[in-house]
Each structure stands twice: as C-alpha cells, then as structure tokens.
Length: 76
Image: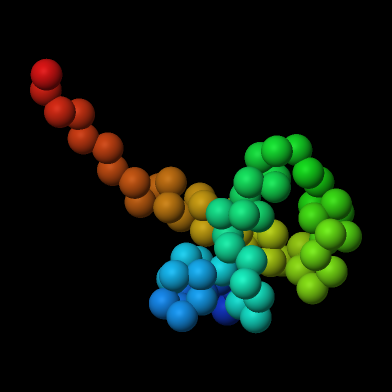
C-alpha cells in the first residue's frame, strides 16, 4: 500500500504535520513512542484505531526522509 494511503499532510490538521490518515496522530508521535521503547502491541492497545500497517507506514515515512536528507558540511 502506498504511503499516501496511510500518511497525509493537511495544513488544517496539526499545522500540516504528517499524520496517520483519519486520525490526528502525528507520524513523529508514533515514532517517539517506538523510540521510547513501547512495543507495537502497546501502541495499538493505547490507540485502538491504529493498525500494524499504520505503524509500519510511519517507519517507512521516516526511512524515506532519512534517505532524502542531504547534509553538507560548512567549512569553519
């Protein structure tokens, strides 16, 4: 399933942050939960509207951004 079917950006929702479609849950929030050590099952239990596919879409979105990031050193 394409990311655009799970992750949306709408300036009217959370000031345009990427969110899981049909929710006000930001991708960054789900990633923070995962980074803090919460398991997929704990997140789904805490937010019953979420699915495993939603969480995987958040991880895919983060991977996409990491691949797109370009850092350029600035000489001192």
